[in-house]
Length: 152
Image (cartoon, rainbow, N blue to C red; front, side, top):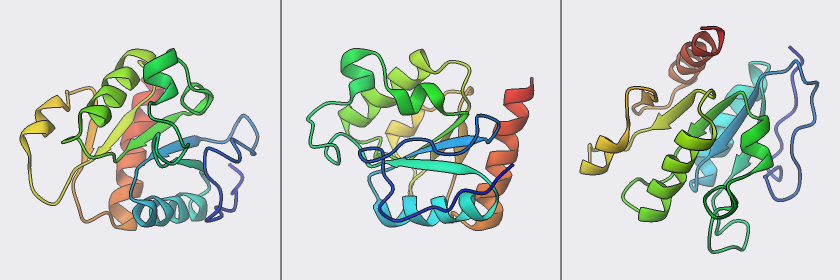
């Protein structure tokens, strides 16, 4: 796997995937840009290619194209998705449900909050849940689990 340098300015709105089609591509969907950037750095250092989507607001839209149009090029080309949007928000719940339908064969790692919430009941067994702290070792372990799901 080739390593792609993760740049802070690299987001879904100004670029998509740059590596070869053999690279594992990880879409990081997270409105917390600092957390997404940190995870992206871990991925880059570990040889993954990643793209960040900070949500519809980052794209100057009011709705997610996956939810509204049923398609998103970043989702369709991702091998693994890391989902960190706030599940207390209905828009985030809609995005997660759309991912569940549109990206059925793509492993999804859901980042949990510091404190359990009732919205976490939306996280079905088909998702991989990752609780904080989001250390390098824990992120890589979750990615290893996701890769194993790809190979099943």
